[in-house]
Length: 249
Length: 225
Image (tube, rainbow over all chains, first blue to last red; front, side, top):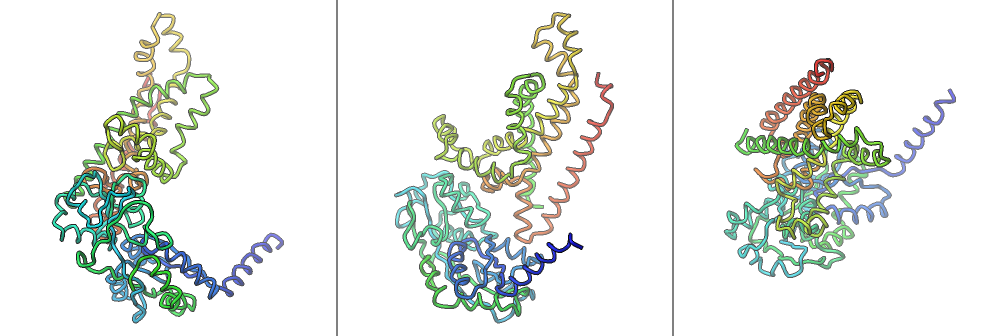
């Protein structure tokens, strides 16, 4: 009997702490992982609930959700994926909303490499250009669209290296292995200022807008903490963080 | 399966073949030294060779990306030699695979050398065979089973590589998109049919390889002598 006591105690402790504050597993598109960390801290401060953030490409996360991942909230990098999850009965109807509008930038870790008009795409002079996998990441798809519209896609295509998600894409550029790449503005801002390097903010008429939607997933239905997180995302404190990272709203 | 999938299969076969050949070339002297030496460096060298067995592929992928990149020491050296930087290139994958599959080639060859024992070498010495002659006409033939095992394991392990390639390959069709990465891509994009074709093929391939390995390593050693 004595052997079992520690286990019983442990179980009791876990149950008690779960009753006080809930953990919300959140799937977050990689471009939003830095702002989400700040939002999660504010959320915990205000409500006591903890958001457990799993970053990844929108494609990968939705595939995990389709295969039974226990995420309660999904912050996608597009509007199409949450809508199709809802149509498939995996998300709660009527809970979708746009939490951020993404801004695509062409970025290089080298100062002066990317000019303010994106002429570098026509000039060339680089070996590798990093793009997030367009099949999985909306920022990747938007980047391909922009290059096609500028008429440079065919020339650049052999130089494209593909990151599995937007975070890996940024890492290819940050380590200098790719001279430049298309990333999210949020990834190259620190405290509202551009990090070292050079960038061109891609005009939004060159690609379809990157409306990033959040949705309550089926496992989060009726969970107060999950619903509280979605409410918090619509609130002023979260919106201030979203704007500070260069997103539109 | 798409033409891109066939190109991934061809690429994987090329990578594994080249890696295996290079490893037999580089690994054999290391295995020979490890099998024969009494140096106090034997332990540390054996441990370094065995590291890829226990390190997460992310560790190797991270260090390779950073050291072989334009700001890393290896990257600076290869740039200075006019070779460019290695990440996102096929030669880069070969370098990574050689490191990653090293223990799978060195260890079977080393074991085979050790299993020969001292006697054949004493005989060779009494027949006044030089060290090179002894190595090629005594050690290598007696250890041939070890070489076959090493080649099979090195090849198969390179085919099974994923994490390192994902981190430093950049997923370029025909250059660095090997089969394992192509499968990952298909699954993430919900393209289950080609994913099944490739994944099923991998299961079949791996089964055949392990069966071959079993036959080679389980046959009585006596026959080799």
